[in-house]
Image 1 (spheres, helix red, strand yellow):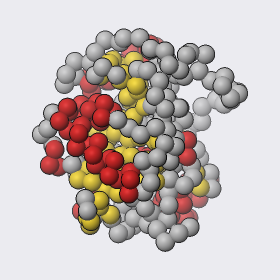
Image 2: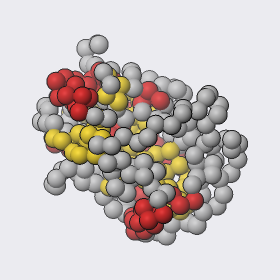
Image 3: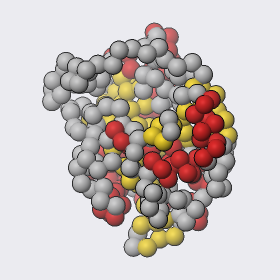
Image 4: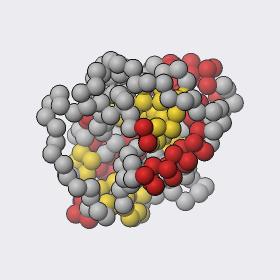
Length: 299
């Protein structure tokens, strides 16, 4: 097992402005070599509460392997699989492909040295985050801990291209964000039946990553403190695009077999089969999200 505090090597730096081109090139090569193993899904619409939810239903689950015992599983980022590495971004992060993507060009932004997924994000994380977002439309999300949907303890942000649904919406959630009301810098959408905090980012659209990082870190800390998520180990999901930031505290990882990570709160859910799809349809996506988050008004 790799030492979780060892360096993961020094991959070549991604050229400024060339991240998405590098992701596409690496994707083509990894598909050809077999290093990339996409999850085959079909997308089913499931509108609810004015949000055009898109549900990906897995067509052919991956072959199950023996689950490693505690302490047996190696850190997949120390070192990362060479055929999945896109390149270094900044001094402390590396971009690599998600080995099992359900969305094409799904990438991970991992710290090059071990940092805990449960610990608060840093200024360095937000500088890299904005470096990725200023190039081309995309959504970055973060699952803070296993209850929030994280499958690895090594710190990693995730990046997917947008739009996730038919334009002009970048994400299904964008359909209701114009209804947000703000108090003290923290926004809330009345139609979302779970605790959440929203921040607008349009004012920093033209800032360089080094300057935007301070603003992003401050807003993240404000949203996290509003729900007690600034404490180490408190589970939450964070979503950031060029226009907004959303933080959602979490209570549980799944509801009736429907697991949810941060993408679910953007309106993009995934279920392992049609039985879980029916569960989702009967309950409604918003009800499922409320059950795995913190329902407004209590459980």
